[in-house]
Length: 212
Image (cartoon, rainbow, N blue to C red; front, side, top):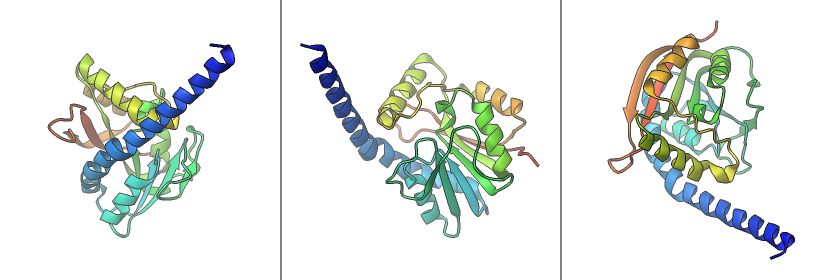
């Protein structure tokens, strides 16, 4: 096989892989998230009215939250904003959020921090624009099997969208250290799995300690 043919075959294989991964995400992973996450997140939102969803993706989770809590307004931002997003999602550079200090009652970081190599910087920016608190949903691991499962799930759900994949998952004690180092206090923590068959460990933190 010539080099040109080999390159064309590789591009075709990658395109087919991406198409399969997008289909898997839409009909498996995304459906599970939309079924299980809104009730858990809404339980922590309280009377907050203006929310920023950092890493909003296709906007469907934010849309579900607004349907579940009429009167809540959610603004989305993402480094990989998608044209077909369910809500308007602004593109940002992953460093500086394009908003003034204290712009939102609550900032959402849903499955975002394990995609960055500098979670402290993301937390600092989220704290800057939040008036009240940060609501963080992510994962945690306790053994190598946990980490492997999370990494595979992360690849399947995000590879096709060119989302950074550093697989920077944390143990619970590492989450605690990160929050303390960032000047944040954990108000509540909710550990769960989507189902008895799902072995990926999920966690929701409500944290306070935002900049004045």
